[in-house]
View 1 (cartoon, one colour):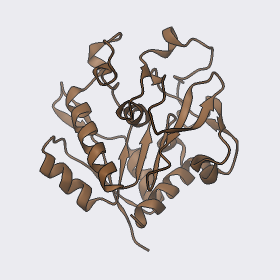
View 2 (cartoon, rainbow, N blue to C red):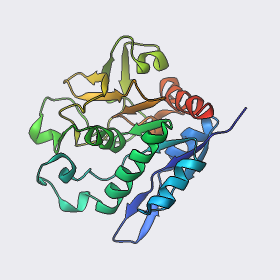
View 3 (tube, one colour):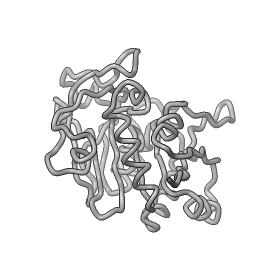
View 4 (cartoon, rainbow, N blue to C red):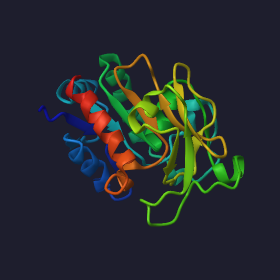
Length: 236
């Protein structure tokens, strides 16, 4: 069976001049039969095009906030929480990936980034902009469920997880506000926050707000997300 090569966007620490990666993203891909490859930072169009050529799919992981410049707003929270170089690389690479119709899995920031690229907006700070009592920023352990989401019927996500209600972990302070054009809501939390998005016109494009990379070892539904993504990458 083909082992698909899956590119993962780097996490960038500007102050330390370093890249880093949480092992769960790589371990989840390995558990699903894929080969994870953390990409180096670059904005060179030729190098980004080469990434698209050599990788069978791409994972857009969690990380810093997406700059509100991309959805026409001014920054309302700590400037240190954004990473302008990563934003630029992520947007440029995503557009090339979609042009080639390679499979995409977005997690947390990845979901928010995809929504913004499709023309959507974000809540910059849920506690102040959408205070509904649901905990979206849980304490450890991060593989434990924090709240439930309702999975929309007939969606890609329902086909993968096989249920209409799903208990998920949660670690974010931003979220989708206005859904981008062309995206379909896959799941919502108990307080109405968008927890999953997909583009039905793509070969495979699914993004979730929770963190399956923290839970796939103990939660079969989280592992199912990685497996469905890897399976899509095998035939890309």
